[in-house]
Amino acid sequence: MPNIIVIALYKFVRLPDYRELQIRLRDFCVAQELKGTLLLAPEGINGTIAGTRAGVDALLSLLRTDPRFADLEHKESFAHAMPFGKMKVRIKKEIVTLGVPGIDPGAQVGTYVAPEDWNALLADPEVLLIDTRNGYEYQMGTFRGATDPQTTTFREFPEYVSKHLDPAQHKKVALFCTGGIRCEKATSFMLGQGFETVYHLQGGILKYLEKIPAENSLWQGECFVFDERMALGQGLELSQPNE
Image (cartoon, rainbow, N blue to C red; front, side, top):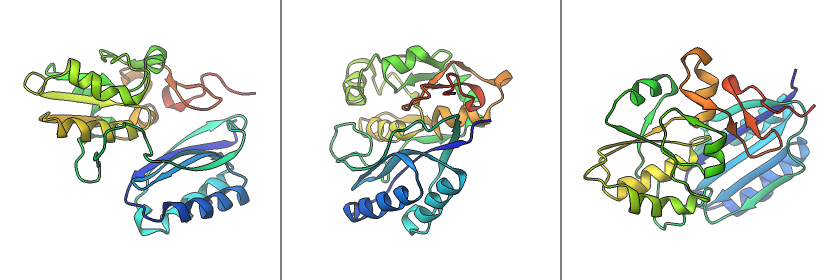
């Protein structure tokens, strides 16, 4: 059985002290023998971390003692071996780079759809389903009927919206991504462009694969993840385990 716990987390929240947090979190993670990457920016935190159950739980407990992270959610999966080489806590301008100034998911964001309600939403013929991830991720796996924007970076998504989508025509749009963070910014951006109703999958593909039984799943293929495991399947099972 895999004995390495891998957690993915993010939260959009104002962090004026993000540089001070960098040192504190780096020292704590190293002491707990955790590895992976945390990104800190004025707009929040984002990252994927791996380690023992005790180490991962210690980090989550530390973060949640800060009132700003008290409701921090995370997704868990597993690995047979450590999927990261070292621990990095980096300072960034954005925790996920869209490149459009002034986008604030804390002020304006799309309608969250729980994994348990996602299939029903996709059954609506008026809903346009868009995969906000990059082309190579789409090719590995996606939801049945999803549109591929054919982007190579998330920075290209605003241009895709400008060229291919119309608020007057596309009244209901549903977005999804790996863990949910890209959709937070994408839905915020689209609402600012005048789109009336924009949904996004709460917790992303990872939460859907965790929650929805294979026999009820509309997911096809595997979900690309940004570590040495490469891909996860239904139930967050390892598709290419490191033995």
